[in-house]
Image (tube, rainbow, N blue to C red; front, side):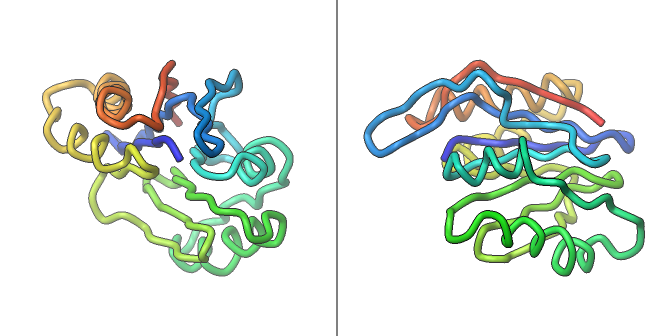
Length: 165
């Protein structure tokens, strides 16, 4: 499932991801980044590649109009994604309006109270790194978090890509 790590610093959102795709016992490196700018958001995805490809490349995503972010995620964004991904397993990190949120394929939507988060099989490693490496600048902190997951989780692989919004 790989890793996506996110951080909000001074109102700016940073998302980073690895480049691994796991299929059964095989692990491959993808060319296209698993973190993208879409519809005024940053979105990072882990999970089944058909769902990840649909979400990151082809799905027309709604823009966040303002208002309560948790309500918009649960009633607008998550259902519009679920409608096109069927029963595939995925986890998304969404950076929008200076906040981080996670949407899972089971419909769970969580807006994070803290300014950092991580998802995927490498998520626990990245989360620990985000918490402990506060002395680094935000872009380097996210990069190092993904690199920590690469070093400790067999389903995570470089290169690392970091975007900001």
